Length: 295
Image (cartoon, rainbow, N blue to C red; front, side):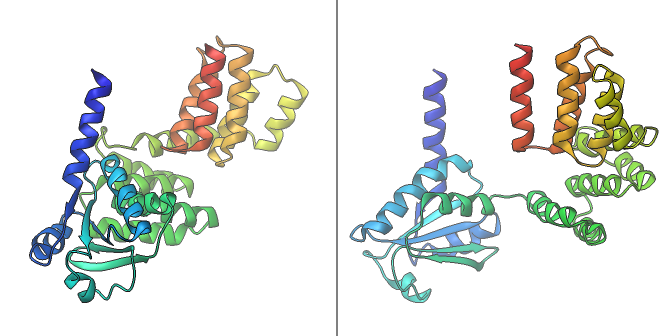
């Protein structure tokens, strides 16, 4: 039964991700293990209600992260050696160990949302963390810093194609199209996320031969049934990263005529979804609107 199998898998993940820690096992289970993946240590005691609640939340969440982080439980009521060594002042207390080093700590009870966010951060890949930093820089228009950061990341991990994907994407955004083509040519076709800069590049190439957004918007206002003008406006807006406006134009084409240029409205929306990337709330909202209209 599918539901049973999912629950069984979750229980197995949880069992593998949560373990008891003692002074005797600390070196092997925490220090050594942290060199492969982050270890979250929870200092708790059954007699301290908030710490027991934190334990229950973390044990429940552990199975959802598919072994990307492990949780070590230190029962202070049984042995206070580790608590004294790490200068634990109260319960619950959380310590994060990565690469054999203490890298973070949280003291006191925390809501589930905070604990989940902590686990999310610990399980992010280097590419995910870099993507978050890039989003901030691109929002500010600080392309030079973004490119410097990417080039440094690539020099440190030259075989990590995820970094090259981001480099190609920033180069297109900066209109360095020839450089972007060169970087894309060196990224295997099946690399996760490669379609984003590749799609952005084709959109940039199309937009280069079109009128500016103001003129295209004027054409659409004057003649709402001019689907070619709507398409060009969608492309130009997408190139300018005005994604919601671009999706509105593509959605209008979809509603007015699905046969226009072989369902170009729907296909344009899919291309813009690719630019927005995984986890985009805007893409999710418009994907739902597209699905509801089509069905």
